Image (cartoon, rainbow, N blue to C red; front, side, top):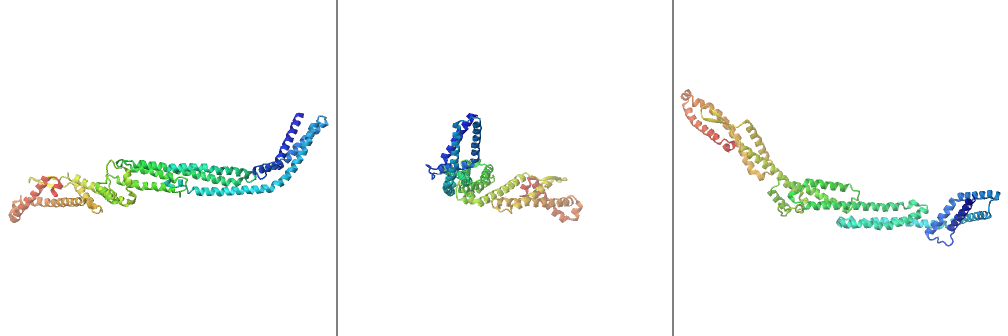
Length: 462
């Protein structure tokens, strides 16, 4: 117990002595903010702990009184306690006096620190505004330079961060710790802007490399639909970015992507199998440039035509190609179908004559084909195949007309032939008509024989 009291007395005396040294302003430069803050801190600490220290001293006093009553107290301990009381009394007085002494200085330095924080905010604001004018916000800057410059910004921010720490520590000790928070947020905002711009430039790099790879594609191997899907994904990724949409770098890559989203559908049109040499010649005239469609043609060659400036012309040419391809297909189909369409023949009694007939199926096909040909006349792209279309219009009309007329002639002839050729009674009663019919009979037989000889409807009728 004795050792404990001795140790406690020494601790208390040392603690009060140290606090007294820290509080006394003599030999201290109170214009030095750090020294001022240390004095302020000690004053506040002493005032805050006054009751606790007083209680500890009273407990030591009571303990020594008990020791003294039992003749166990030592003079050295009593003297130390007396010194502790004296030093404590001095410390409280000094604390009170110093508090008054430093109050105006603390207020002044607090105001200075607040002004420093205000100027810091202004400097950060100016830095932010100036930063947004730097080249890495411009699309022409290029990825490599932009990323290097952006990384350099973090180094510049260390100056602000050092001031934030210095002024922030002072503000906290002056009791205004939240005063620095705006500066912290401003610097954090700059970091976010820089990180977002780095993300944007990384994406720009991806886009540019993708477009460069597209350019080297051979025209005949180009897959425009797959490429368009890839570019659409690049567009979505760009629009999902949390970046300043007004930045020139953003606008630049956005414009580049948009150009490809216009270009790719156009080359998809041009890659259509319906495109013929005549259509490519029309395109060359529109764009005013010459090129050759072969295995050496690259997509870059087509891109350099700046088709976006001729979008309507390209769409017109490709639409014409598709419409003409349909007409060409229909005409080829007509050629293929009618080259093999033959009449059906039926022997007429024992006359040696074969009656001609077009099957019901072929007659229905004839009518459908006539409708198709008539429809082609309404196309504004009639010119290329007009001669063929007119030919088929006349050919099908001829087949239709001849089949109908021959059918009627055959019906009349088969009836009259029975009367004027095989009936003696009719020959007697109508001798002139019977003689006249002999010529008709020969002509009909000749026509039907010719039909039987040709077999094919197209050959016979046209």
